[in-house]
Length: 232
Image 1 (cartoon, rainbow, N blue to C red):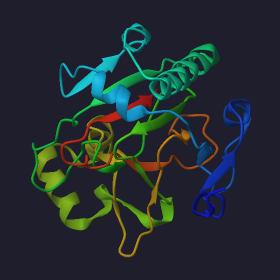
Image 2 (cartoon, one colour):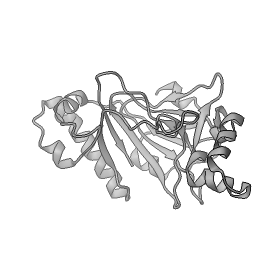
Image 3 (cartoon, one colour):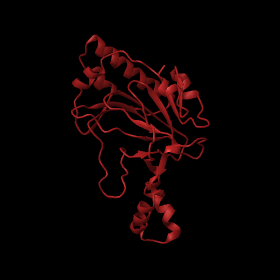
Image 4 (cartoon, rainbow, N blue to C red):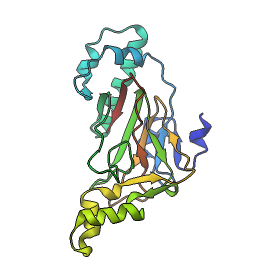
């Protein structure tokens, strides 16, 4: 077992999919990891898939159409099984071949793309599931080591200028434009990289949530390398 995960008070480590979906978030734990050392050649799958856009959704049919080696087939069966497990659970998993996400370049004083630390929000009770099979993997940050960007004085002042409306509507403006979802790491913050092959469940901000939502970010991709990511 990886001590980085098992000794981290933010992370709960489980050994089955059943435990992943049935374990409750509580206390400081807002990230659950089904820890796995996967067999199979995921690089082969990535090399044989076709990127149509910067983010290309890959279907089960796309995977089944690939002519793969024994190790490539092992990797394919793992991915198909993960997709089926999540679908049977009631989730809507998406397998993405990813070159890069779109960058937020609208404002020079605040970034609100997925490369920025952020939390997910939903009007209903749900969680974020993700697994990186190949390429760079995401980071999470303990909530106490993250500062909401809208609380940074110079950013807040510029957002007030951008709002240019009644002061009593400012907080609603921040929420409506999703500025309140984004964070920056505090000095000496210690992020945890989610690694390859582990299936994660991250807490989302929703009305029934009992813990703080998990602060996370997408990684900067390795040059010349695609990512293969399951997410829902």
